[in-house]
Length: 102
Image (cartoon, rainbow, N blue to C red; front, side, top):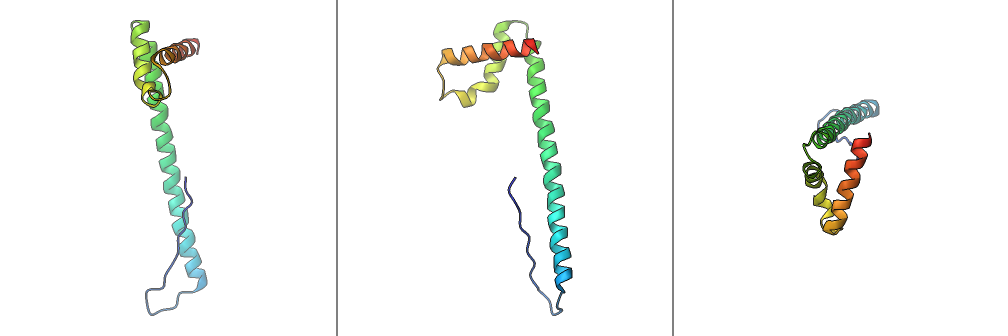
């Protein structure tokens, strides 16, 4: 998460006190902290659910080939430029072994 800074500018005729500005700035920062916290928790829950769905699909696959294909659909995107097809297949096999042990 990136830090946020909130400032205040006087837009009226009245002179706000330093205390009023401080309370306003603190309130804005507190509100953004709550929003960021809620977004973090929701993102973590969605990611956790996605991983759980993948594990269930892999473990319930009718064949090893179907399980390896499911793993490949999930992992191959980032790995395509970094690995050969044989290396990816070996990695998929390792993932499947780990999931079945757990």
